[in-house]
Amino acid sequence: MTLERATSGGLYLQLVNRLRERISSGELSPGDRLPSERDLAISLGVSRTTIVNAYRELEAQGLVRGHVGRGTFVCALEEANTGEGAFAWHGKVALSSLRSADSNLRALVRNTTDSSVISFATGVTALDRFPVARFAELTNCILSERPIDSLSLAPTEGHLSLRTAIATREQVAVGRIMVVAGAQQALDFATRLLVDPGESVIMDRPGYLGAIPVFRAAGANIVGWDSATGGVDELEDLILRFRPKFLYCTPTNRNPSGQTWSERFRRDLLELVRRYRMPVIEDDPYGELWFDNPPPPSLAKLSNGYGIIRIGTFAKTLSGALRLGWVTAEEAVINHLAVIKQRSDVCSPSLSQLAVGALIKSGDFDRHLTHLRPELKRRHDAMLRAISQEWPAGIVRFQRVSGGIFLWGDFGGRIDPCILQVEAGRLGVTFVPGESFYPEAGGRSEVRLCFASQPPAAIQEGVRRLGLAIRHELARNRQPLQQEPLV
Image (cartoon, rainbow, N blue to C red; front, side, top):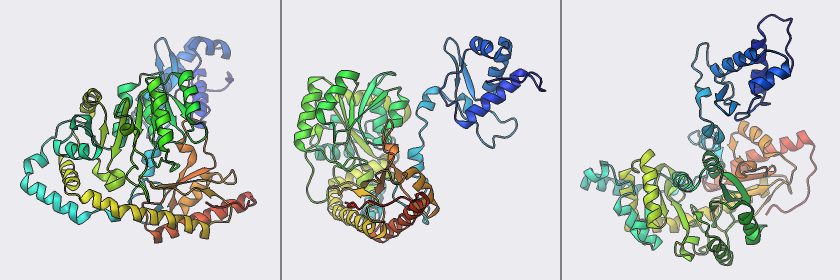
Protein backbone atom coordinates (compact mmCIF):
# COMPACT_ATOMS: atom_id res chain seq x y z
CA MET A 1 0.00 0.00 0.00
CA THR A 2 1.27 3.48 -0.87
CA LEU A 3 -0.03 6.95 -0.06
CA GLU A 4 0.12 9.93 -2.44
CA ARG A 5 1.61 12.85 -0.53
CA ALA A 6 0.94 15.38 -3.31
CA THR A 7 -2.82 14.80 -3.46
CA SER A 8 -5.37 16.90 -1.63
CA GLY A 9 -6.70 15.60 1.66
CA GLY A 10 -4.85 14.34 4.68
CA LEU A 11 -2.71 11.22 4.56
CA TYR A 12 -4.88 9.62 7.21
CA LEU A 13 -7.99 10.06 5.00
CA GLN A 14 -6.18 8.34 2.13
CA LEU A 15 -5.35 5.48 4.47
CA VAL A 16 -8.96 5.34 5.64
CA ASN A 17 -10.19 5.05 2.05
CA ARG A 18 -7.60 2.42 1.11
CA LEU A 19 -8.46 0.23 4.09
CA ARG A 20 -12.21 0.72 3.54
CA GLU A 21 -11.79 -0.44 -0.07
CA ARG A 22 -9.97 -3.57 1.07
CA ILE A 23 -12.66 -4.32 3.62
CA SER A 24 -15.44 -3.78 1.07
CA SER A 25 -13.73 -6.02 -1.51
CA GLY A 26 -13.33 -8.83 1.00
CA GLU A 27 -9.53 -8.66 0.94
CA LEU A 28 -9.82 -7.86 4.63
CA SER A 29 -12.46 -9.91 6.43
CA PRO A 30 -14.13 -9.59 9.85
CA GLY A 31 -11.72 -10.87 12.46
CA ASP A 32 -8.56 -9.98 10.50
CA ARG A 33 -5.95 -8.16 12.56
CA LEU A 34 -4.54 -4.94 11.12
CA PRO A 35 -0.84 -4.09 11.48
CA SER A 36 0.13 -2.35 14.69
CA GLU A 37 0.18 1.44 14.58
CA ARG A 38 3.98 1.44 14.88
CA ASP A 39 4.59 -1.20 12.19
CA LEU A 40 2.23 0.39 9.68
CA ALA A 41 3.72 3.84 10.29
CA ILE A 42 7.21 2.49 9.55
CA SER A 43 5.97 0.58 6.49
CA LEU A 44 4.25 3.63 4.96
CA GLY A 45 6.85 6.16 6.08
CA VAL A 46 4.37 8.31 7.96
CA SER A 47 3.95 9.41 11.55
CA ARG A 48 2.27 7.18 14.06
CA THR A 49 -0.29 9.97 14.57
CA THR A 50 -1.47 9.45 10.97
CA ILE A 51 -2.13 5.77 11.65
CA VAL A 52 -3.85 6.50 14.97
CA ASN A 53 -6.18 9.03 13.31
CA ALA A 54 -7.00 6.61 10.45
CA TYR A 55 -7.77 3.74 12.83
CA ARG A 56 -9.95 6.01 14.97
CA GLU A 57 -11.91 7.14 11.91
CA LEU A 58 -12.45 3.54 10.79
CA GLU A 59 -13.55 2.63 14.31
CA ALA A 60 -16.01 5.55 14.32
CA GLN A 61 -17.41 4.17 11.05
CA GLY A 62 -17.84 0.79 12.72
CA LEU A 63 -15.40 -1.05 10.44
CA VAL A 64 -12.61 -1.83 12.91
CA ARG A 65 -12.23 -2.09 16.64
CA GLY A 66 -9.17 -1.66 18.83
CA HIS A 67 -8.55 -3.94 21.80
CA VAL A 68 -6.01 -2.93 24.42
CA GLY A 69 -3.06 -5.27 24.37
CA ARG A 70 -4.37 -7.21 21.37
CA GLY A 71 -4.44 -4.82 18.43
CA THR A 72 -6.97 -3.50 15.91
CA PHE A 73 -9.32 -5.90 14.13
CA VAL A 74 -11.74 -5.69 11.23
CA CYS A 75 -15.14 -6.11 12.85
CA ALA A 76 -17.72 -5.61 10.08
CA LEU A 77 -18.32 -4.97 6.43
CA GLU A 78 -19.76 -1.68 5.25
CA GLU A 79 -23.54 -1.64 5.35
CA ALA A 80 -25.42 -0.23 2.39
CA ASN A 81 -27.94 2.61 2.77
CA THR A 82 -26.97 3.47 6.33
CA GLY A 83 -27.48 7.16 5.58
CA GLU A 84 -25.39 10.10 6.63
CA GLY A 85 -25.04 10.29 10.36
CA ALA A 86 -26.40 6.80 10.97
CA PHE A 87 -25.10 5.11 14.10
CA ALA A 88 -22.55 2.42 13.21
CA TRP A 89 -24.16 -0.46 15.06
CA HIS A 90 -22.42 -3.00 12.85
CA GLY A 91 -19.12 -1.88 14.35
CA LYS A 92 -20.32 -2.67 17.86
CA VAL A 93 -20.97 -6.34 17.19
CA ALA A 94 -18.92 -8.65 19.42
CA LEU A 95 -16.18 -10.68 17.76
CA SER A 96 -17.80 -13.84 19.14
CA SER A 97 -20.93 -13.00 17.13
CA LEU A 98 -18.90 -12.41 13.99
CA ARG A 99 -17.39 -15.87 14.33
CA SER A 100 -20.88 -17.36 14.00
CA ALA A 101 -22.33 -14.89 11.48
CA ASP A 102 -23.75 -17.67 9.32
CA SER A 103 -27.12 -16.82 7.73
CA ASN A 104 -27.77 -20.26 6.22
CA LEU A 105 -30.61 -21.14 8.60
CA ARG A 106 -32.29 -17.77 8.11
CA ALA A 107 -31.99 -18.16 4.34
CA LEU A 108 -33.68 -21.58 4.50
CA VAL A 109 -36.93 -20.16 5.89
CA ARG A 110 -36.90 -16.95 3.85
CA ASN A 111 -39.28 -18.17 1.12
CA THR A 112 -41.47 -20.53 3.12
CA THR A 113 -44.54 -18.29 2.80
CA ASP A 114 -44.03 -17.45 -0.89
CA SER A 115 -46.42 -19.66 -2.83
CA SER A 116 -44.63 -18.93 -6.11
CA VAL A 117 -41.44 -20.62 -4.86
CA ILE A 118 -41.09 -24.40 -4.66
CA SER A 119 -38.66 -25.02 -1.84
CA PHE A 120 -36.51 -28.12 -1.67
CA ALA A 121 -34.27 -26.21 0.76
CA THR A 122 -36.14 -26.05 4.06
CA GLY A 123 -36.10 -29.22 6.13
CA VAL A 124 -39.86 -29.32 6.62
CA THR A 125 -42.00 -32.42 6.94
CA ALA A 126 -45.34 -33.00 5.16
CA LEU A 127 -47.33 -30.26 6.88
CA ASP A 128 -50.43 -31.10 4.86
CA ARG A 129 -50.51 -34.37 6.85
CA PHE A 130 -50.57 -32.60 10.21
CA PRO A 131 -53.56 -33.83 12.30
CA VAL A 132 -55.20 -30.41 12.27
CA ALA A 133 -58.68 -31.41 13.40
CA ARG A 134 -57.50 -33.55 16.31
CA PHE A 135 -54.91 -30.97 17.41
CA ALA A 136 -57.53 -28.20 17.34
CA GLU A 137 -59.94 -30.38 19.34
CA LEU A 138 -57.30 -31.09 21.99
CA THR A 139 -56.19 -27.46 22.13
CA ASN A 140 -59.75 -26.17 22.58
CA CYS A 141 -60.44 -28.77 25.23
CA ILE A 142 -57.29 -27.86 27.16
CA LEU A 143 -58.06 -24.13 26.96
CA SER A 144 -61.59 -24.75 28.24
CA GLU A 145 -60.74 -27.19 31.02
CA ARG A 146 -57.28 -25.94 32.05
CA PRO A 147 -57.11 -22.23 31.15
CA ILE A 148 -54.71 -21.32 33.95
CA ASP A 149 -52.28 -24.12 33.09
CA SER A 150 -52.51 -23.23 29.42
CA LEU A 151 -51.70 -19.57 29.89
CA SER A 152 -49.27 -19.72 32.81
CA LEU A 153 -45.50 -20.07 32.68
CA ALA A 154 -44.39 -23.68 32.81
CA PRO A 155 -41.41 -25.03 34.75
CA THR A 156 -38.13 -24.43 32.95
CA GLU A 157 -37.67 -28.18 32.49
CA GLY A 158 -41.10 -28.38 30.83
CA HIS A 159 -44.68 -29.28 31.71
CA LEU A 160 -44.82 -32.51 33.66
CA SER A 161 -47.52 -33.91 31.36
CA LEU A 162 -45.35 -33.57 28.24
CA ARG A 163 -42.19 -34.71 30.01
CA THR A 164 -44.04 -37.78 31.25
CA ALA A 165 -45.39 -38.56 27.78
CA ILE A 166 -41.91 -38.25 26.24
CA ALA A 167 -40.29 -40.24 29.05
CA THR A 168 -42.80 -43.07 28.52
CA ARG A 169 -42.00 -43.25 24.79
CA GLU A 170 -38.25 -42.97 25.45
CA GLN A 171 -38.42 -45.47 28.32
CA VAL A 172 -36.47 -43.25 30.71
CA ALA A 173 -37.21 -41.52 34.01
CA VAL A 174 -39.06 -38.20 33.82
CA GLY A 175 -36.15 -36.49 35.56
CA ARG A 176 -33.99 -37.22 32.53
CA ILE A 177 -36.19 -35.17 30.17
CA MET A 178 -36.10 -31.41 29.55
CA VAL A 179 -38.40 -29.68 27.07
CA VAL A 180 -36.80 -27.05 24.81
CA ALA A 181 -37.90 -24.72 22.02
CA GLY A 182 -36.67 -27.01 19.27
CA ALA A 183 -33.56 -29.08 18.63
CA GLN A 184 -31.52 -26.01 17.62
CA GLN A 185 -31.96 -24.56 21.09
CA ALA A 186 -31.03 -27.88 22.67
CA LEU A 187 -27.81 -28.03 20.66
CA ASP A 188 -26.95 -24.46 21.65
CA PHE A 189 -27.51 -25.20 25.34
CA ALA A 190 -25.52 -28.44 25.26
CA THR A 191 -22.62 -26.70 23.53
CA ARG A 192 -22.64 -23.87 26.06
CA LEU A 193 -22.58 -26.47 28.81
CA LEU A 194 -19.59 -28.41 27.51
CA VAL A 195 -17.31 -26.16 25.45
CA ASP A 196 -14.86 -23.45 26.39
CA PRO A 197 -13.22 -21.27 23.70
CA GLY A 198 -10.32 -23.00 22.00
CA GLU A 199 -11.50 -26.54 22.72
CA SER A 200 -12.22 -29.00 19.90
CA VAL A 201 -15.42 -30.79 18.94
CA ILE A 202 -15.83 -33.53 16.34
CA MET A 203 -18.82 -33.55 14.03
CA ASP A 204 -19.80 -36.02 11.34
CA ARG A 205 -19.33 -34.53 7.89
CA PRO A 206 -21.25 -33.67 5.89
CA GLY A 207 -23.40 -32.74 8.84
CA TYR A 208 -26.19 -30.50 10.06
CA LEU A 209 -25.49 -26.95 8.83
CA GLY A 210 -27.10 -25.41 11.93
CA ALA A 211 -24.51 -27.03 14.20
CA ILE A 212 -21.55 -25.28 12.60
CA PRO A 213 -22.40 -21.69 13.69
CA VAL A 214 -23.31 -22.94 17.18
CA PHE A 215 -19.88 -24.48 17.61
CA ARG A 216 -18.13 -21.46 16.12
CA ALA A 217 -20.01 -19.10 18.43
CA ALA A 218 -18.68 -21.12 21.36
CA GLY A 219 -15.14 -20.59 20.05
CA ALA A 220 -14.71 -24.28 19.31
CA ASN A 221 -12.28 -25.80 16.85
CA ILE A 222 -14.50 -27.94 14.60
CA VAL A 223 -12.98 -31.22 13.43
CA GLY A 224 -14.79 -33.01 10.61
CA TRP A 225 -15.11 -36.81 10.61
CA ASP A 226 -16.50 -38.81 7.68
CA SER A 227 -18.10 -41.84 9.31
CA ALA A 228 -18.96 -43.37 5.93
CA THR A 229 -15.34 -43.62 4.75
CA GLY A 230 -13.20 -43.21 7.86
CA GLY A 231 -15.10 -45.37 10.29
CA VAL A 232 -14.33 -45.82 13.97
CA ASP A 233 -10.57 -46.13 13.37
CA GLU A 234 -10.37 -42.62 11.94
CA LEU A 235 -12.49 -41.33 14.81
CA GLU A 236 -10.01 -42.77 17.29
CA ASP A 237 -7.14 -41.06 15.46
CA LEU A 238 -9.00 -37.75 15.69
CA ILE A 239 -9.69 -38.25 19.39
CA LEU A 240 -6.01 -38.88 20.09
CA ARG A 241 -4.92 -35.91 17.99
CA PHE A 242 -7.41 -33.23 19.06
CA ARG A 243 -8.67 -34.42 22.48
CA PRO A 244 -12.19 -33.16 21.65
CA LYS A 245 -14.73 -32.12 24.25
CA PHE A 246 -17.48 -34.16 22.58
CA LEU A 247 -18.65 -35.90 19.41
CA TYR A 248 -21.72 -34.51 17.65
CA CYS A 249 -23.51 -36.92 15.32
CA THR A 250 -26.84 -37.87 13.75
CA PRO A 251 -26.75 -41.68 13.51
CA THR A 252 -30.21 -42.14 11.96
CA ASN A 253 -31.30 -40.77 8.55
CA ARG A 254 -28.58 -38.16 8.85
CA ASN A 255 -28.96 -34.61 7.59
CA PRO A 256 -27.94 -34.17 4.78
CA SER A 257 -26.81 -37.57 3.46
CA GLY A 258 -29.68 -39.74 4.75
CA GLN A 259 -27.15 -42.28 6.05
CA THR A 260 -28.13 -44.57 8.94
CA TRP A 261 -25.50 -46.32 11.03
CA SER A 262 -25.81 -50.07 11.58
CA GLU A 263 -26.20 -51.40 15.11
CA ARG A 264 -22.71 -52.92 14.90
CA PHE A 265 -21.22 -49.54 14.01
CA ARG A 266 -23.09 -47.89 16.88
CA ARG A 267 -21.81 -50.43 19.38
CA ASP A 268 -18.23 -50.08 18.14
CA LEU A 269 -18.48 -46.29 18.45
CA LEU A 270 -19.93 -46.50 21.94
CA GLU A 271 -17.10 -48.79 23.01
CA LEU A 272 -14.58 -46.27 21.68
CA VAL A 273 -16.07 -43.16 23.31
CA ARG A 274 -16.52 -45.02 26.60
CA ARG A 275 -12.84 -45.94 26.54
CA TYR A 276 -11.86 -42.29 26.13
CA ARG A 277 -14.64 -40.99 28.40
CA MET A 278 -15.83 -38.65 25.67
CA PRO A 279 -19.41 -37.34 25.72
CA VAL A 280 -21.63 -37.69 22.66
CA ILE A 281 -24.40 -35.33 21.56
CA GLU A 282 -26.77 -37.57 19.61
CA ASP A 283 -29.08 -35.48 17.42
CA ASP A 284 -32.07 -37.62 16.47
CA PRO A 285 -34.73 -35.58 14.65
CA TYR A 286 -35.43 -38.24 12.02
CA GLY A 287 -35.42 -41.46 14.04
CA GLU A 288 -39.21 -41.84 13.78
CA LEU A 289 -39.27 -41.18 10.02
CA TRP A 290 -38.37 -44.62 8.67
CA PHE A 291 -40.03 -46.02 5.56
CA ASP A 292 -40.20 -49.82 5.78
CA ASN A 293 -38.17 -51.00 8.77
CA PRO A 294 -37.33 -49.29 12.07
CA PRO A 295 -33.69 -48.21 12.46
CA PRO A 296 -31.34 -49.70 15.08
CA PRO A 297 -31.73 -48.48 18.66
CA SER A 298 -30.40 -45.03 19.46
CA LEU A 299 -26.96 -44.55 20.99
CA ALA A 300 -28.67 -43.43 24.19
CA LYS A 301 -30.68 -46.65 24.36
CA LEU A 302 -27.73 -48.90 23.55
CA SER A 303 -25.58 -47.22 26.21
CA ASN A 304 -28.39 -46.85 28.75
CA GLY A 305 -27.77 -43.13 28.54
CA TYR A 306 -24.15 -43.33 29.70
CA GLY A 307 -22.24 -40.28 28.40
CA ILE A 308 -24.98 -39.39 25.89
CA ILE A 309 -26.97 -36.17 25.51
CA ARG A 310 -29.76 -37.09 23.10
CA ILE A 311 -31.78 -34.41 21.29
CA GLY A 312 -35.26 -35.03 19.93
CA THR A 313 -37.82 -32.77 18.30
CA PHE A 314 -41.40 -32.61 17.10
CA ALA A 315 -40.36 -30.32 14.23
CA LYS A 316 -39.97 -33.19 11.75
CA THR A 317 -42.83 -35.37 12.95
CA LEU A 318 -45.44 -32.65 13.56
CA SER A 319 -44.37 -29.06 12.81
CA GLY A 320 -41.39 -26.83 13.47
CA ALA A 321 -43.75 -23.97 14.26
CA LEU A 322 -44.70 -25.69 17.54
CA ARG A 323 -41.12 -24.93 18.73
CA LEU A 324 -40.98 -28.05 20.84
CA GLY A 325 -38.10 -30.44 21.29
CA TRP A 326 -36.51 -32.25 24.18
CA VAL A 327 -33.22 -33.38 25.67
CA THR A 328 -32.62 -36.78 27.25
CA ALA A 329 -29.65 -36.95 29.59
CA GLU A 330 -28.60 -37.82 33.13
CA GLU A 331 -30.45 -35.77 35.74
CA ALA A 332 -27.32 -33.84 36.72
CA VAL A 333 -26.92 -32.74 33.08
CA ILE A 334 -30.61 -31.79 32.86
CA ASN A 335 -30.20 -29.57 35.93
CA HIS A 336 -27.21 -27.80 34.36
CA LEU A 337 -29.09 -27.34 31.06
CA ALA A 338 -32.14 -25.92 32.89
CA VAL A 339 -29.94 -23.24 34.47
CA ILE A 340 -28.59 -22.32 31.03
CA LYS A 341 -32.11 -22.32 29.55
CA GLN A 342 -33.56 -19.98 32.16
CA ARG A 343 -31.01 -17.29 31.22
CA SER A 344 -32.53 -16.89 27.76
CA ASP A 345 -35.86 -18.73 27.72
CA VAL A 346 -37.64 -19.17 31.03
CA CYS A 347 -40.01 -21.78 29.63
CA SER A 348 -41.36 -23.27 26.43
CA PRO A 349 -44.97 -22.45 25.34
CA SER A 350 -47.40 -24.02 27.81
CA LEU A 351 -50.37 -24.55 25.49
CA SER A 352 -48.27 -26.31 22.85
CA GLN A 353 -46.72 -28.54 25.50
CA LEU A 354 -50.09 -29.56 26.92
CA ALA A 355 -51.56 -30.21 23.46
CA VAL A 356 -48.65 -32.33 22.25
CA GLY A 357 -48.60 -34.21 25.56
CA ALA A 358 -52.29 -35.02 25.10
CA LEU A 359 -51.67 -36.03 21.48
CA ILE A 360 -49.07 -38.56 22.63
CA LYS A 361 -51.08 -39.86 25.58
CA SER A 362 -54.20 -40.42 23.44
CA GLY A 363 -52.25 -42.45 20.88
CA ASP A 364 -52.97 -39.94 18.12
CA PHE A 365 -49.30 -39.11 17.71
CA ASP A 366 -48.36 -42.70 16.92
CA ARG A 367 -51.36 -43.02 14.58
CA HIS A 368 -50.15 -39.88 12.82
CA LEU A 369 -46.71 -41.46 12.33
CA THR A 370 -48.23 -44.57 10.74
CA HIS A 371 -49.77 -42.32 8.07
CA LEU A 372 -46.80 -39.98 7.72
CA ARG A 373 -44.15 -42.63 7.03
CA PRO A 374 -45.65 -44.08 3.83
CA GLU A 375 -46.38 -40.56 2.58
CA LEU A 376 -42.73 -39.57 3.00
CA LYS A 377 -41.67 -42.71 1.12
CA ARG A 378 -44.10 -41.82 -1.68
CA ARG A 379 -42.57 -38.34 -1.97
CA HIS A 380 -39.04 -39.76 -1.87
CA ASP A 381 -39.88 -42.08 -4.76
CA ALA A 382 -41.65 -39.26 -6.63
CA MET A 383 -38.57 -37.04 -6.47
CA LEU A 384 -36.22 -39.76 -7.74
CA ARG A 385 -38.65 -40.57 -10.53
CA ALA A 386 -38.98 -36.90 -11.51
CA ILE A 387 -35.20 -36.46 -11.56
CA SER A 388 -34.78 -39.41 -13.89
CA GLN A 389 -37.43 -37.90 -16.19
CA GLU A 390 -36.56 -34.20 -16.09
CA TRP A 391 -32.78 -33.99 -15.71
CA PRO A 392 -30.10 -34.80 -18.29
CA ALA A 393 -29.01 -38.41 -17.96
CA GLY A 394 -25.89 -38.92 -15.91
CA ILE A 395 -25.66 -35.36 -14.58
CA VAL A 396 -25.98 -36.29 -10.90
CA ARG A 397 -25.85 -39.29 -8.59
CA PHE A 398 -28.36 -39.72 -5.77
CA GLN A 399 -28.55 -42.50 -3.22
CA ARG A 400 -31.87 -43.94 -2.09
CA VAL A 401 -32.50 -43.54 1.62
CA SER A 402 -34.45 -45.68 4.07
CA GLY A 403 -36.01 -42.75 5.91
CA GLY A 404 -35.74 -39.09 6.78
CA ILE A 405 -36.61 -36.17 4.50
CA PHE A 406 -33.52 -35.49 2.34
CA LEU A 407 -31.78 -36.66 -0.81
CA TRP A 408 -28.05 -35.99 -1.17
CA GLY A 409 -26.61 -35.73 -4.67
CA ASP A 410 -23.26 -35.19 -6.35
CA PHE A 411 -22.77 -33.46 -9.71
CA GLY A 412 -19.26 -34.89 -9.94
CA GLY A 413 -17.71 -31.48 -10.58
CA ARG A 414 -19.71 -30.82 -13.75
CA ILE A 415 -21.89 -28.11 -12.15
CA ASP A 416 -21.23 -25.71 -9.29
CA PRO A 417 -24.38 -25.85 -7.08
CA CYS A 418 -23.74 -22.32 -5.78
CA ILE A 419 -23.98 -20.95 -9.31
CA LEU A 420 -26.91 -23.24 -10.10
CA GLN A 421 -28.71 -21.92 -7.02
CA VAL A 422 -28.84 -18.42 -8.50
CA GLU A 423 -30.35 -19.60 -11.80
CA ALA A 424 -32.79 -21.88 -9.97
CA GLY A 425 -33.92 -18.95 -7.82
CA ARG A 426 -34.87 -17.03 -10.95
CA LEU A 427 -37.06 -19.97 -11.94
CA GLY A 428 -38.78 -20.13 -8.56
CA VAL A 429 -37.16 -23.16 -6.96
CA THR A 430 -34.67 -23.40 -4.08
CA PHE A 431 -32.27 -25.98 -2.66
CA VAL A 432 -29.13 -25.99 -0.52
CA PRO A 433 -25.61 -26.34 -1.98
CA GLY A 434 -23.50 -29.01 -0.33
CA GLU A 435 -20.69 -26.81 0.94
CA SER A 436 -23.00 -25.46 3.66
CA PHE A 437 -22.79 -28.84 5.43
CA TYR A 438 -19.01 -28.93 5.84
CA PRO A 439 -17.15 -27.24 8.72
CA GLU A 440 -14.18 -26.89 6.38
CA ALA A 441 -13.77 -26.89 2.60
CA GLY A 442 -15.92 -29.50 0.90
CA GLY A 443 -19.16 -30.23 -0.90
CA ARG A 444 -18.43 -28.06 -3.93
CA SER A 445 -20.34 -30.34 -6.28
CA GLU A 446 -22.91 -31.74 -3.83
CA VAL A 447 -26.51 -30.73 -3.26
CA ARG A 448 -29.29 -31.42 -0.76
CA LEU A 449 -32.95 -31.65 -1.73
CA CYS A 450 -35.80 -31.96 0.77
CA PHE A 451 -38.51 -34.18 -0.71
CA ALA A 452 -40.82 -34.16 2.33
CA SER A 453 -42.21 -30.64 2.19
CA GLN A 454 -43.90 -30.82 -1.23
CA PRO A 455 -46.67 -33.06 -2.61
CA PRO A 456 -45.75 -35.16 -5.69
CA ALA A 457 -47.21 -32.66 -8.21
CA ALA A 458 -45.11 -29.82 -6.79
CA ILE A 459 -42.08 -32.10 -6.64
CA GLN A 460 -42.48 -32.84 -10.35
CA GLU A 461 -42.73 -29.13 -11.20
CA GLY A 462 -39.84 -28.12 -8.95
CA VAL A 463 -37.59 -30.82 -10.40
CA ARG A 464 -38.58 -29.67 -13.91
CA ARG A 465 -37.53 -26.10 -13.09
CA LEU A 466 -34.24 -27.36 -11.69
CA GLY A 467 -33.74 -29.34 -14.87
CA LEU A 468 -34.07 -26.13 -16.89
CA ALA A 469 -31.49 -24.43 -14.66
CA ILE A 470 -29.13 -27.40 -15.06
CA ARG A 471 -29.41 -27.35 -18.84
CA HIS A 472 -28.73 -23.61 -18.82
CA GLU A 473 -25.53 -24.15 -16.81
CA LEU A 474 -24.42 -27.04 -19.01
CA ALA A 475 -24.89 -24.92 -22.11
CA ARG A 476 -23.01 -22.05 -20.54
CA ASN A 477 -20.11 -24.28 -19.52
CA ARG A 478 -20.35 -26.63 -22.51
CA GLN A 479 -19.97 -29.56 -20.14
CA PRO A 480 -20.17 -33.08 -21.66
CA LEU A 481 -22.36 -35.63 -19.90
CA GLN A 482 -21.06 -38.87 -18.44
CA GLN A 483 -23.48 -41.75 -18.60
CA GLU A 484 -23.82 -42.74 -14.96
CA PRO A 485 -26.87 -44.01 -13.08
CA LEU A 486 -28.93 -41.41 -11.27
CA VAL A 487 -29.48 -43.61 -8.25
